[in-house]
Structure formats: structure tokens, C-alpha cells
Length: 305
Image 1 (cartoon, rainbow, N blue to C red):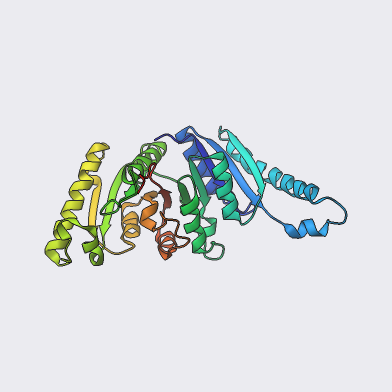
Image 2: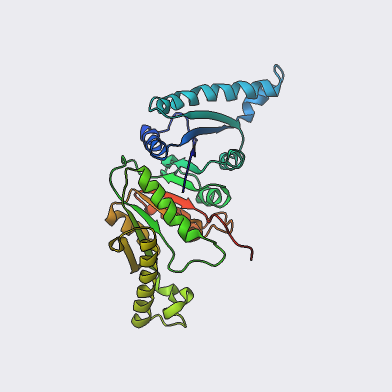
């Protein structure tokens, strides 16, 4: 998997932490990628105030140029790291829709959202994260942690049973995890999957037919573990780095903390947004629970129904 163009959405020019620029710079250097900074501005009150003295287009142009100069100062920090950086400001609203529209035009390989909007006082409503994941044409990376990247692992989180109609999502998740791990100085990749006891029947296979007792659970865990080990072998990942367990909805967050993961990669279907769900509660719960960054990818190809 090759990513050569990253896009960082800068929602707050004055509140972008320096650790975000550091982390994005590390990723861009490791991927040998170009970086675009995007900021959306929309101030209708400014246009109305000057309506009688200047044309609206001139006022908008001046506002956009003022923001662009400030965005260029952030771009210069990254250019000083030897990166090729482009800075763009758009007059657009709502912000998340403006980000998606710009991504559809410029087609970045990865869209990066700083963790600023995950802080309690400033985070966006959960449906906006869900909508962004559902509508973005590119994988979405949420920068959650304030820690500097170290040698922590990258976790590829996989569903116990690949979902029908999701194409090669599982391969995409593992491929993305390996790409990120390589960019981060060869960090190890681990595969993880958690089976929810209350949903064993829906997974099919050995535990189907409503058998949610211990024999069915054990058989389903073994079956899933065997499948993930085959996947690990195919991608040159040690079978010792495969974990399948019975758990609960947020077992992934607990495992990431135990493994000291620096990033989790999972498929959009795991957050129930593959069909464009505007805001499943799981998106909010997952982002709140994680101590590390979260990269959400989609299948590169979804076969017709």
C-alpha cells in the first residue's frame, strides 16, 4: 500500500498543538509523502457588516487570505522538517462537510484529523466523526494521543467474521497497518479480534445455531484464531502477535492499552458506518476509550450486491 499525499485538516489555527505537527511530520517523512494543510473558514457576519462598502467577494477574499497567511506559518514549521507542504483555505461550512468536499476534489491518500475535537470541552458532536468516516473518500486518521511516537505496536483490529459486501476490507486493514508501521521506523504489527458472547450466533461457523455456551465460545475463538493466523502468515506477521478473545464492546481499547499501541487500524464497518450511518454511538465510545491514534479505512473495492 502506497500513500503519497496526506491532508491535515486544521480546524483551529491558534489551537493546533505542536505535537500534532511533529506526529504528522514523522508520518509524512516515513511515507515519503507530500502534505496539504486545509482550513475552512465561514464568517457571514463579516460579509454583512461590509455589504454597503465592499462587494461580498472582496470581503471573503480578504478573510481567506488572512487565514492563509496564518496557515502558512504552520506550514513553514513542517517545511523546516524538509517536507513539501501546501496550504489551502476554503470558504465553506459546515467545517466537516467542507473537509469532505475538498478531499473529494484533491483526493488525498489519508485524511488526518487532530485530536483537538476529541477533547471534552472542544470535541465535535459524535455524529460528525461518524459522518466524516462515512463520507470521506480516503482513510481517516484521528490523532488522539499527545505522546510522541515510540516503538509501540500498530494494531490491526479485525472483525471475528468478515462482513459480506465489504470487499477486501480485511486485507486493506492489515495492509494499512503494515504501511503505517513501516513509516514509523518498523514498528511491530499485531492482529486483534474480540468476539462478543451475545453475538456468537450471528458470527456463524462453529458457534452458530444459538449455542452461546462455553463449547460454542471456545470453538468460535479457535476458528477465528486459526483464520487470523493464516492472515498473519500471509503478511509475514508472527503468530505470537495474534490475539483473539471473548470480550466486550471496548475490549479493543483495553488490549491497545495493554500492548502499548501507538495506533489502531480498523475497518469502517467495525464502527457501523460503512453504510453512511450519520452517528452510531460506538464512534464516540471508541474515540473516548482509546489512548492511542485511530485510523479508519474502507475496502478498496466493494462488489455489487
